[in-house]
Length: 145
Image (tube, rainbow, N blue to C red; front, side, top):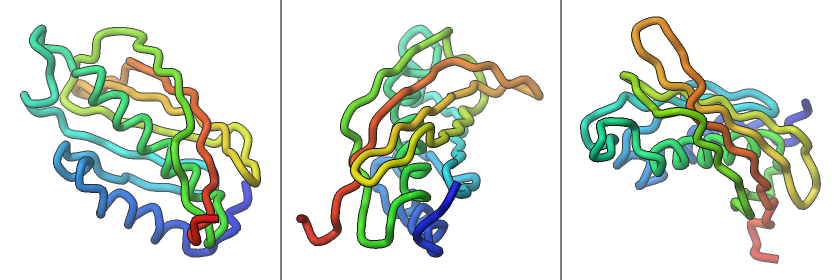
């Protein structure tokens, strides 16, 4: 997949580093390339719901922001990304020491990118798919037009 902005990595890194909510939760960028992005979150007690499983809001946050990171890798330098819509499928209870997410662009476009994220709970050496996001990201001009 083509990355129209050669500085896409710097932009994605800044998007993770400067997102206050992500910093509060603890989500960090693992890596990215043209059309994809990966992130991780070490699970702490504050990420769990009352039953002891990883909260759906935490899973949704990592899936959405990682999808946005993937979208930024195929967005021109004069644009940025806003989520238009997504569907989150919670496939099983999230139980583990970390969440690892990989997002990839299914169809890039000039105005919208279609993206998919998979969220895995990691425990010891085992990765288990716990949720999946399908979404649409809008390409917005930086000048507001």
